[in-house]
Length: 100
Length: 457
Image (cartoon, rainbow over all chains, first blue to last red; front, side, top):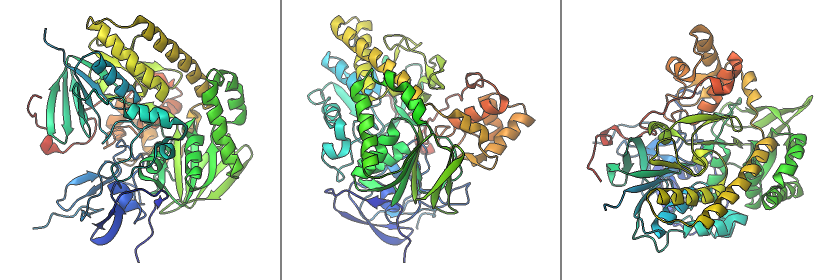
């Protein structure tokens, strides 16, 4: 069983359900969620940090701290708080070489 | 005559009012903003799919928020609005942009900087744990995403945002376990006469506190020695209060100690800066009408000194009228006088706010050596103190070069305040006398492949 998420959804809103993966594991979010929200609703963190013994989960949520970057299927870095989740997105909390 | 190229950076209350004022006067203007939609942080609009009614999102401020969101309606033909666009470098009359259109270079004649602010942090044990967020970040999670940052949330720090965010969380159904304010009740009481200069704002603050108390949420004033317990995630928050202390279990923390202006672009553009004793921050110098030291540059909103959203709206319009006057347009002197009176009233209130919620800079003196100050590069307080002592790093840029503080991805946004205060306390020097980190392009990370010069827009 996967660990529970850090975030808790409180408010109802219109966005449709979206299916995506985190490190290959299927997960769900809603349209209008950022990548950060989508992951933290399903996981306790966004992955390991470079310098602290514990994981990171973002901090400022407004594009200033740069602590919420994750990777997409092409290996590109995506800033979690300012990127919207999209259907079938494959997100990686640690760097994975691109396929092919 | 060729129409001058006017640019506004930032689409919060200041930038939106500035752009709308220029456009209404018949001037074409480029409005650049990093967010997906206009409103800035305070009136941030949720992304498509996460919308909720304005009353649910903005409370008492719903009418103001909606007014800002609609301020550009009917002016679209004169406003070249560029969302999700970062200005990552600026010099002379040239801006380097990165956005949906890729990398572009934009040449301008006159520029209004309305770059806003972010939370000011003070490091405390546990502040790097996943689940500890900035206070503004906690508010964005709720406002723009309809989410709480955890199941049992503690809010710590000081400033008017602290009771507001706690109240918003409680109202939305989150479990708020404690509100810990570093400002004491007595400190606030002494500032009450000054706060009464804007009685409606003061009354709102009291209302939020009353609502928190009504719900039985513990509010502790005058806390010190904040720490979050937990090896891999927050488990409890602890504090000292006089000779006693407290501990409450929680799984998330929102922490903020006032705001800090975003000034990197003003710095890269060569604006003169001065140290502001009231907020203990370096700010770009501006004259009474909003002109920067560089005469083709103008400053408005929290990016030019923290004054809040109402002041930002007034200042945005005010500085646009200054710019129009400088271009030789006729401007309404009565309107300018009204805006100036409003700004002066808010400035008096701001002084009372700073007195009611003083930045607890003395906390930096007791930060343990093992504590991480720079989140990006893992620089500890001990690392900094060793460089200060061993290599005579008595100035911030020297300390940066030796320690890597402020050299990471956030460019010092999260750590420069703490680093500066720590250096000042360690050397027993005035905080205004230890220098300020110089701006450095790119002001935020951009893909290297995209940083080569593009076409002239």
